[in-house]
Each structure stands twice: as C-alpha cells, then as structure tokens.
Image (cartoon, rainbow, N blue to C red; front, side, top):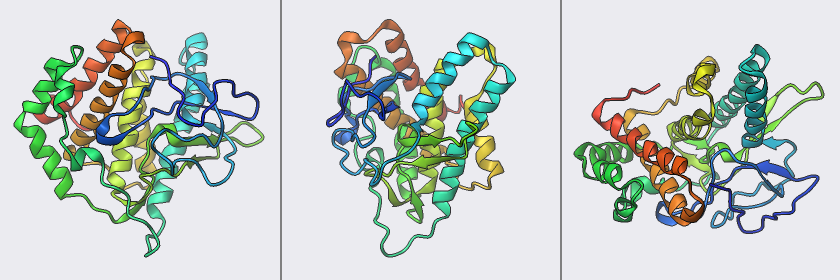
Length: 297
C-alpha cells in the first residue's frame, strides 16, 4: 500500500523537506490510509490529519527514522548484512531507545499535561466492523471472542500508571540527527497529541510493536537480524526500566491490528495479496500472546 499525504503535506516537496512514514490516525482506531516502509516527501512541519499537536514547535534538523531505515534496507539488499550495516542498524535503534530513556527520566510537574489513554483501553478493543473485513474476519473474530482478550485489556487499563513523561507516539515521529562524520549522535522525539504524562511502558510497547510490524517484515530472514531484540538490548543497556507487561503488549498488538485493518479498508483498491497476508499475520500476534503461543521478547 502507498502512503497517503495528510492534511498540510505536499506531494511535490523538494529540497529542505524530510522523508517520513506517518500513518494517519483517527478516532476509535480508524485512521485514514497508511503504508508499510515506504518513503514520501513531506514538509518538516507537516501534521497528520486529526493530530494537530504532532508538528514540532521548531524546525527539526535531521531525517525521520523511517527514511533512514528505508535507505539502510536498500543498502542491505545491495550489499547483504555486512558488519558496517549491522552496526548502523544498531545505532539507529539505539538512538531511539536512548531518546525514550531520556524522556522517561525527565521530571513530571504540575505543568505536564496528562496524555490521553490509548483508545484501545477506553473503547471496544476489537470493533465489530473489523470482523466483517474479508481479509481478517476469522482471526479478528477469534481475538474479539477470546475471553483472555478482554481480561488482558482490562488488566492493562487497571494497571495504567500515568507517572512518567512520555512520547506517546511511535517510530513515525522519531527523527535521527547525524554529526559531521555521519555518525548518529541522537534521536529526537516529535511531540504529538499523546505526548505528556502517561505510562512509559506504552512507549516501549509501541516501539517494539512498530519495529516488529514495520521493520521486521522488510528484513530478509536469511540476514538473521532481530531488530526487536536489538532495540530491547540497547534499551536495557541504557538502564531502561519500563518494559511492557504481557497485558500491555496484547493491547498494543490489538490496537496496531485494528489501525492497519482500517488502513487497508480505506485503501483496498491498491492493496495487494501480500498486504492482505501481512495484515492477517498482524491478527495472529495478539492471539498468540493471549494463548501463550508467543512470548514477550
């Protein structure tokens, strides 16, 4: 599927613009269109539809993580998983992990606004309309009907801890900066509608989920690269202490499956058989977690 430009974005963006993958999200987990690891030129201050707080307050110097990863995937395809490219992937993921650790350690005060509860914890986690989509009907119905699904979502909601400053967004709102030697010194987290005081574990769950869903399928299995494990290893090495519970991981995978199902439904005319297979696999993930067939990383 291709990326649809959100409100305020230009298809003819040129020099000075950045490259990003930014799925458009909406109410009740029903976003507009979105794409897998694709590249679309947009302006540095462009904002996803329905997400007015997502644009940074100042110009951001650097490139979004999705663009960096897309270039790295091209290089891996051309050259194979050689050591320098593996190191660069580790640096990119490590920069994101470091940025999360930093924001979670920033103090929360009276002026820190409360981040909204993720929709999957405040509404029906698997809306009925999803079970009517031919591509995912069976698996979506199984997730919706499984008693452990509701228990996991209820547990995640009951255990929600709005005690840290959080990013609240995923990999589409991470910008990578490089120094004069092309090294990766830092990642910037673009503030969004979900930035504020929330549960740091949701940030980490969202990062792990984005990596597994967007980056993981784009890697050749023969390369033997596990980006989820690499991110988590970097996060732990940096002293990160907000790893998600199984219940939060279930809720995050459900939210992802619903949001991408809505994206496919909105862009069904251009969806390929591979897109349908990829989407069906997304619905296997929460089911594997609630049944114990899959383990947390």
